[in-house]
Image (cartoon, rainbow, N blue to C red; front, side, top):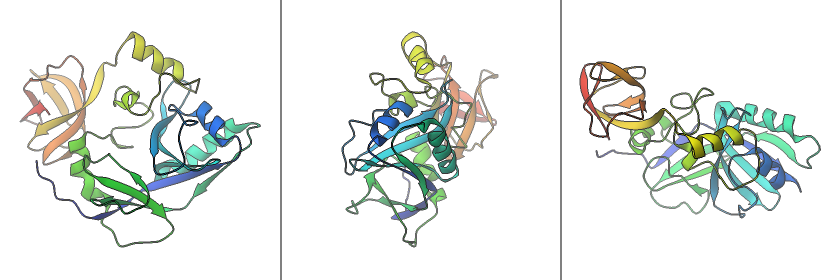
Length: 256
């Protein structure tokens, strides 16, 4: 499925800066992925901020700008929530936490020489941020690429009712060897002793819309969360065979 894409896209991002001699240890205790081992530079490590019951507060990318300076990249509507959650848990940790009003951009194609790699869209891309306003396309133009890549989006595939494993985030955003953090126990229990009843899947379908039921032999086995012509994303029950002929809105569909 060939998808055209613009060269520069404006991203709806929120940024939280955490600075101080104990910033690394504090974030290590709060986030689902390793932070202490992150080196300063152009690496962004995916992580989750979770409730004690492992519900998602916010998906994050963690960038270490300097030894004692971290930038947490999240969705625009979640930055204040992330900052407030961290401030409540900080106690005596020696670090400062503040929301930064940066503008975010995605560069498709050549490395712009700054920022971090972004793999959300299945193509070579780099994410940058700063105070400068630039002419750029809207993020909606990336929707077909995101769906094709199977990347969940906040407010569509992700909210506080979704378990990380259902969206496949346990494979990308979680370390199972690090120390304790809020929500660790339910995530580890599901990882080692069970499996989620449903998973996020890419589907091939001519037309669909969010909210459509996914049917197998007239039985509902899932629901569409995002769609563009030819492709959809949705949560599908695990027992559905890979080669099953499904129905969405009266149209034939298959797992991609």
